[in-house]
Length: 153
View 1 (cartoon, rainbow, N blue to C red):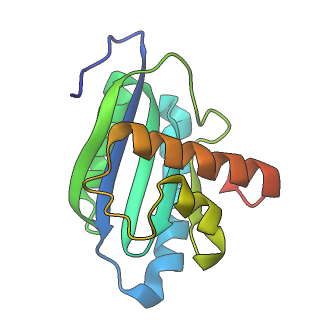
View 2: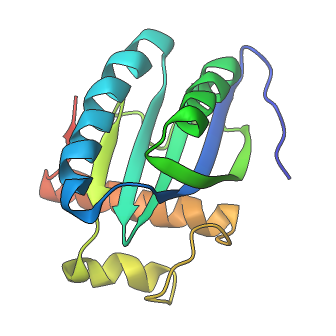
View 3: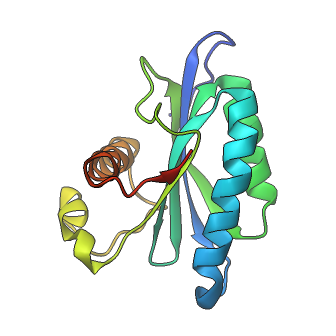
């Protein structure tokens, strides 16, 4: 169950959505999302990670509750997303993605180790539980950190 954090409490919101982007434009559109998100998120103390895979977005937003909710409302209005759903939301004891105002990772078949984290290759992000979503995003964060492939600022 989602809960709203107090104004001084760190809040984490994880959502999933289907991509409403032509497959040939995914890289260009994700690059645009990251650029705009970095600018917006720096101004509002939001950090996060965007996972892009097989027609899906899975994203964690961390920061002040109102800022995280404002960012999510922008996402709901973004025509590149459809069927958005909050996977989990509530107070967080610390930032899991504090190194990035926004980072994006596109998963490929070479990312089998990440996919095994969920013990499945067919991932339906809309039905993914909050604990599993966070675990997956943390696994992606770990790989980003180790490989230096993070596309962020």
